[in-house]
Length: 592
Image 1 (cartoon, one colour):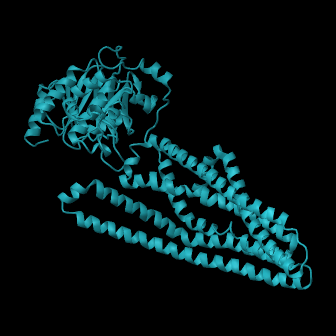
Image 2 (tube, rainbow, N blue to C red; image 1 turned 90 degrees about the horizontal axis):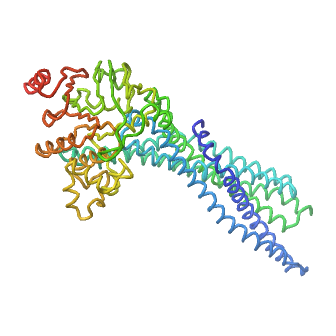
Image 3 (cartoon, rainbow, N blue to C red; image 1 turned 120 degrees about the vertical axis):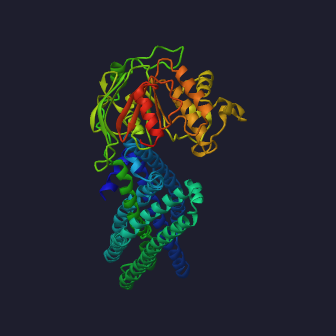
């Protein structure tokens, strides 16, 4: 319930529309029961007039029937229009709000979730919260207000009928939903969890199909999906049984209200206190009064699912930020600390200083894990080129993670332009660093659109220069649509090496004074790798370059090589120096 209440502030900006939606919904249900009641009274009165021969003015009630029919029809249309529009607006704002809340915890905290589970939380769970307003809060308000109005109307004709109706309305609209919520709570939560597990398994099966085929594990994984599907179906059946029982009880409440009202009104008609026409009207009115409460058991049945979805969504929102952030992202403060932004490749303004100084840096991903970086020290003056080399797991990528403020380091200092990284907001730090990760993400759009993420103002000449440096311009030139070629979902139309080079070109376009490339030559043949590295170094134009690689060739053009092993610097110096040469020899001999 606490998490659901946290959704209410999202309705506040749309309060006028919410009030209008409640009014239209209330108007519609009142017009509907009024139409039923007036029509029954009208038909009964016409029948009595026909039998007795008494004159009857049918013009006014006929006009009332038409007015109520038009009100019900128009009110239903407008109610759906207003309430669904409000729901869609709230849902879109909920997504934006959620993304803004989880952005500061990415990628550190989000890496704790499997990709399918994260997708399920961001899509399916948020969609489930859509029911909170339109199928939960709104029907409850309308049922409460309409029931009070129905009671007042019936009280005017017969206190006994009014008491019968309000008692059974309370049973159907309060007691029954409470019982359904209790019965469906565990099953609803289990349904959400099982649906998330099933979606996660399907996503992983689709994404990892190649590996599953290669290791002959397709059948085992499909069997797992079938088991998850059967488990999900079981939870759905349990909820369906709850819904079937609630339907039956609802019918009993409506039927009971009808018969009890009949027992109350028969003596009144016999005593002359109530005529037959009014009796027919009251009985139909009682049956029609249950329309607003009929949806409440379904809302209660969904309550368990909505509550479970809200817990999963707010688990992302409430994740503790991984950074000891970061005093400010204010551009004025950033400018004061760093100077004017870097102007980019040649022809642009001179870059401001972006010296990096690291001292006694210690970092680990969790308190119970080994140190990924264990007391490293190095300097990266503006314009210097370094290579950080080491075997897999040596800590190379961890250097990039802490520099880019993806993760918080526990011990030591990192200074950028003489300012501690923790004194500057993470966004501001990243304006100074351009990064091409080992496994880059390309969006499902054109090559051009993926590239200009680095610099939205980049022209064709700048794009061509970046593609040439990344050794991928020939590929783009061979494509039918050139830069406008769609790369497919996650860049699936390109090979892994091509995606990596597109990402390198994107990083080159970003106007940042420090360029960090993680495994830039991975998957490239030796000649292409050498050409790309030579082009990178010759086109640096005052940029600092950090090459992170486990390969020991193609790094001759750097000023310094830093060799890591188990998070520690084991050798450091120029590419041909004794320390680095000794490390390379040790790697070749299999000692390190």
